[in-house]
Image (cartoon, rainbow, N blue to C red; front, side, top):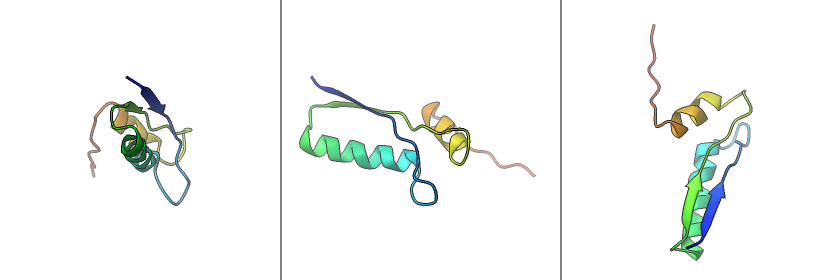
Length: 65
């Protein structure tokens, strides 16, 4: 079995690292359906950091006021 690890950062102002993970994973599986694809959204501490962390730990955002 093949294994593919995808760890992208976001493209600021266009697409999040989580969305990129989903797109790349879908394309890899299209060509290699038996591949074990692991996705890890990455962030550099700026925009998208919280979303990347929440995706990795399967958390959710809770807004407070």
